Image (cartoon, rainbow, N blue to C red; front, side, top):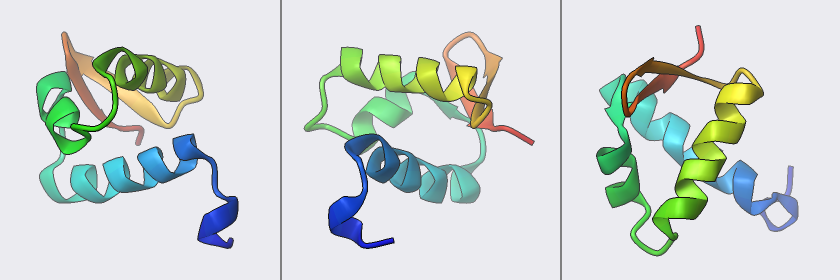
Length: 68
């Protein structure tokens, strides 16, 4: 897929997966620090949406991991 045609959510998820594959489970604070130019509320909504879509799973309070 042409990177210019990817949505901001797809770009966000792609970058998040790169870090999660390397670091495993991540806290919301760690995720916020990866994307300093994105509002924390926007990040939270994206995380919530990815959990609902089955792309991420909550691993605990404020902890996320890739859905296995």
